Amino acid sequence: MPTDADVDAIMRLDGRVFGEVWKPEDQERQRTVMDLDRFRIAVEDSAVVGVAGSYALQMTVPGGSAVPTGGVTFVAVGSTHRRRGVLTRLMEEIHQDIDDRGEPLAALTASEGGIYERFGYGVVTRRRITLLDRRRAQVSPAFRPERPQVQAIDWDHPSLPDELATRWARVRPLRAAEIDRSAAWLKMQIGDRGAGATWVLHEDGFACWTITARWNDGHPAHELEVRDLAAATPEAHAALWDAVLSVDLVGPIRCLVVALDDPLPYLLTDPRALRTVELNDFVWCHLRDVAACFSTRTFGTDDELVIECSGRRWLVGGGGCRRVRTRPDLVAEPSALGPLLMGVAPTTLAAGRRVSARSPEVLHRADILLAMFPMPHGMSGF
Image (tube, rainbow, N blue to C red; front, side, top):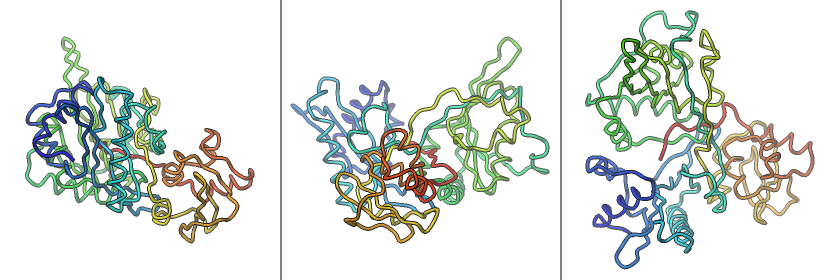
């Protein structure tokens, strides 16, 4: 377990592995959200050669309740110590710590897509990167607010963290796989984005963006990047996007927070102006306590099905979740349990060879029972 004396070495290793340089001020902000009791390091000859840790999070499940979650983070092994079992040992240690803390779910966001399925993690959300040409589309006049409903607030205003926290508490339960944002996390986020970020508030949401100037010899087409857009109501969603699309001198708008089923295209005067340019995995989940996780979520019907994974069977449905010995209706790979928990359609997982069903009729019942709308979606990296 590391101490404060190891933080510099952890940051240097992280920087080497991920190609970044931690500035002192960035490191200081990051340290405010790191509980070193939740971190483990691999050391050889007094040098830190591997690290992994976790955050204490609350993750939304279908229905709006939250599950205590170990948010696995800072996973890094030096290139000089690859293929020696260091990563496996670190993950075992972190998972044991999460279990010891009574957190039934582990989750992470991955730097590469081919690492974590072997540890039992499955993809529950996708990060969709979009481009929107402001010059081609605006929010349709029929959906614009009749009066201004969005106000700017300075990034260093002392009330900004509290304003964001109040709104996020209403947004977080609306999407499975979203996480809470602590006061320390929000302060770190505000500091990381700095004076160049614009923050705007709606009574039911908020947005944040940054701008890179492109003057183009008198033909400005600044690049705007939406860093956050969180809305608890459809009215807030339309008003916040109207604020984004009303920024002058802007051409392309890049965004990493538009859900796959986001209604934004329906609000635009030209829906084709919004393009998806990349689609990657984002949140991965690994159930450490299957019964505790499934007992927290809601279901589409009062039906029940038996799910088998790694030789164990659970009766899942309106009555909660408990261990049984009954014939299974679904047989799932370990990496499928996270997606099933969060509401990914069993039919999709069956087509992807992560789930098999006893019959087509059972698979149809599973879709009605387990799939949830809106889709699971996460905006919060960790």
